[in-house]
Image (cartoon, rainbow, N blue to C red; front, top):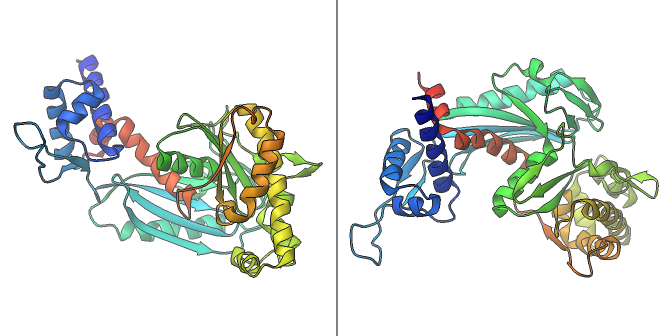
Length: 375
């Protein structure tokens, strides 16, 4: 009996994932063809998912073949959601995402959080999250994930070190006291959102904010490393100086003659005005970034680099210097040219990736989730 239940749970997960991740709505027959499951089995699975409020049926559409019209299937919006939270150096926020990909709530507060008190910041974040949940109407929250800009131990959970925040060995889980909360590095979660948007692929992702984070995605899957500490590209030394100190947002503002506490919009305005100091500062940062990325690409062997965060907003100005350094330093570039592209996952990808990480648990085992969520 246990084996049969396990098989049903596996089939339920396969059916749900195929529906949720489809580019266009699938019918029951298409789900069967795509998954290899028997049509009768798929019919039963889909009926169960519809009854549970995870999937809904659209209006039937006539196919070219004779027979009954096909009924397209999509994720049911507004029923199950994941909460993505983030603390970064210059903002904190919360995003609520449902299984259909619809953003149900989003709130971001900008602030300078350098050398901040963890308890105070996390208390503010908890209030934002509580307010977001209170505003939801008949939505079941599947869990929450918090993105943090530093080393998060994926085994034991504490935030080990977030140098730009000035936090070290902070027991975030104990401070927040939210059941089921998980922690992860913000760049890893942003890369998860990017992989979701691109529907797979292999690339090195770089997340530029005040600090610089990175992540490696191989065939659509995030490579975390043993402890979840992979991708710390900001600490790669370029000419004996950490990349963050040459290409981080503070460094670019300072080198452009702008106060480091200023917002990126000031630098963007200076670039739009063709200010030579701003152009020089950003080009210099792009060259340092390209050098560090070249080292990473030589190790992991991917053919694409994705620029997110600050670098995504500065893409038109940094792409050229980054590409030049990659072409010059990556050993296989003459035979497999590298692509530099702009991130597609939106303004706050780490929060989106955090919410997606929650929902991935529902997709991986909807049967168990349904049993756990019943009153």
